[in-house]
Every structure is written in C-alpha cells, then in structure tokens.
Length: 105
Image (cartoon, rainbow, N blue to C red; front, side):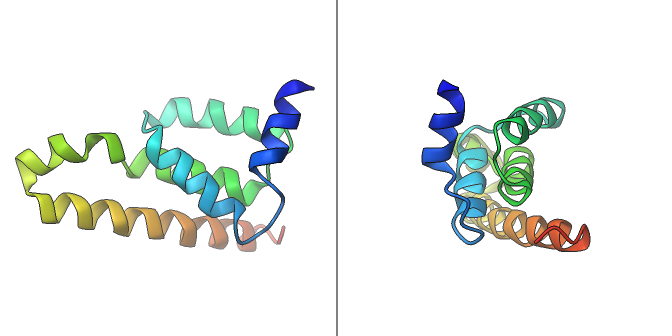
C-alpha cells in the first residue's frame, strides 16, 4: 500500500507527463537490461502505466547520465551528450509507438 501511494504521487496517469518522468528516472538509474525488466514488472504491478514503464526501460538501457563523464573521456563530450539526448528522445518515441501498436492508448 505504501509503495502504491508513492508511485501514484510520481506517476499521475497523465499520458504526456508520465513517459517523461519514466524516461528521466530511467536515465538517472542506468542499469543492465535484464534488471530493467524486473523493475518494469514491479512498476506495472504498482499501477504505473505501460507508457511510463516502456519509457523507463528504454532510458534505463540506453541513456546513462551517470556515465557521461566516462563516455566523454573516451568518445568526446559532444558525442556523449548528443548520444544521450537522442536516446532519451527515442525512448519517448518508442514508448509511444509500442503502446500505440498494442492499442492501449
């Protein structure tokens, strides 16, 4: 009950804001793909929308805000920032397309 109250405060059910919140939280908590499915499943159990969870999973696996300094040192600052911005935007687009494809919106 406590977690459901917590998630309902963060994820309001708004189809425009929830995917952005999901993508932002996934970007900050960068991790391995296999663990993103577990976290996503738990979010779905708590009533978070599929749109937000899909954006979270995509951002979790492709965007790494905490890894930008390391990535920039090897590949360049401009590349690291551009890659992360593009992946963030695509996490939103793909989330919308996935949910639209499943006809859940």
